[in-house]
Image 1 (tube, one colour):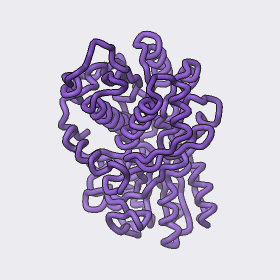
Image 2 (tube, rainbow, N blue to C red):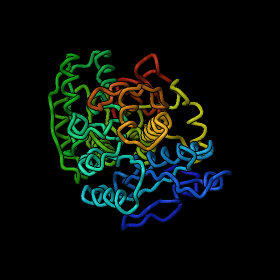
Image 3 (cartoon, one colour):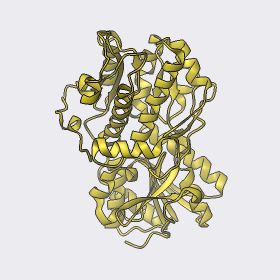
Image 4 (cartoon, rainbow, N blue to C red):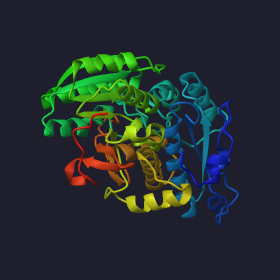
Length: 399
């Protein structure tokens, strides 16, 4: 994790507690004019330890950056924001306990979601019963179809993640896909989107297999892929399994014209973990530093100054998620959750992550996705063509 900020040097408890006042920069804590009125508490759990922690740490950075920005500008409703956050360790039962604690013990005023769909699904009933609005960084749409009206989707739908990869593949005339899917909620939902989009684009899936999230040896699976000789290998993955599949493909000399994965390639750790094997691998992203979205140039500069490295899309959508919530509170002029919900649901907004807009059930219909590729040790945005920072390198060279 690249960071120049001392906040990430604080020890992370294996017993879940992280944060509180540690989530604020010193400049915010010492801002002039703060009275004795208690701060507005913004609560969440995040996966800050374990295999899923790299994206969640970027999300925390995004939240911190926006909270610090709000506090430097005088706070929200004349009160400073205070982030209260805990480590759920990617455990749904732990996340449930932590959101109960946030609501009953910490008595937070506003909520943000955990990282990852399974955790968001676990805490959704608690949040909805409490009738507190929660912008969610969960890409699956199930929780936003009317069952939990206080949840709103604050990132691109899972089904749209791989759209630019399939568009690019179709543009290149590729015809066949091998699909590898981690057996958890987000990858399974993503895979359904791949199947639908591939069929619509005239591509054929000739190999389709799921694997347990604990899988570390992908040799046998990748040999089966190689026997099918697909044009494209697509992984519905997180970071560690995306790395494992690429390693296995190189070790077994299994080649394809295109390799593309969700989550993994967007993280800097993907390249540091794989080295040259990461070259020319495609990923999908929901944001990129070069995009001309509202406030994006300032966001990137402020992030680099605060944390000593570049943000990824998780930081951008988290920043935008809290930004949308803060704007709604300001417009309402109070912490009235029903009015805040109405404001978020009915007023589209332009953010760092793009155009935020919801359908009547809270599903995100405004945000897009993009294809990136590792080229010469750097991420380049390669599709759609109108947004690219470099043309795509295809076909993938033999290992």
